[in-house]
Image (cartoon, rainbow, N blue to C red; front, side, top):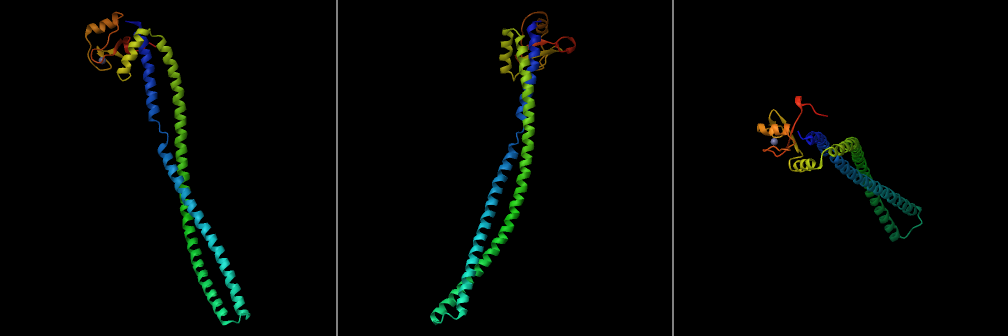
Length: 242
Ligand SMILES: [Zn+2]
């Protein structure tokens, strides 16, 4: 048998391992879904917190306005009952002003009450969203950490396999190596097929007896007529030669 074939078999073993690592890489979950959920909740939480802030600001404004209205009303009442104003027209105007201030005060009382209720409701919304956001953050962080750990592990394995691949391909003469690579590129990453029980293991086609014998007894590099892969006869017992 051509000695390049057992060297190619050893190389293909590494190529299978590399392909497996690549599949594992593709299957890794980076936590994109968890990140989207966390981002969504963070925006919702920020919006809700801003709304709460606006409600509280409006309430403080209304309280300041109420306090100003009350002061003004008390001043007018003091003046009205002090007897210092005697002109009936002036008294009438003052009475009206006091009434207007009274209406303003009840409007502000109502507004403040409403803003307090809305503030309480909004506080509940904010704390619920905060809890959901924190849960989403933990879920995302857990996924993300698992992803990083898996990525590190796979990179280490991959680096090891690539060094092994370099060594093993260096052991194959350039001609057979080139053939293996081009068949591999065309045939789903498998360039070499073992012969087992007179069959090509890659496509399960029965091989002509003289093909099997030529592989075994000569230096010829033969391919399977059915799948086009290089044929290799594993040593007796199917043991790996390495
Ligand atoms: Zn085949």
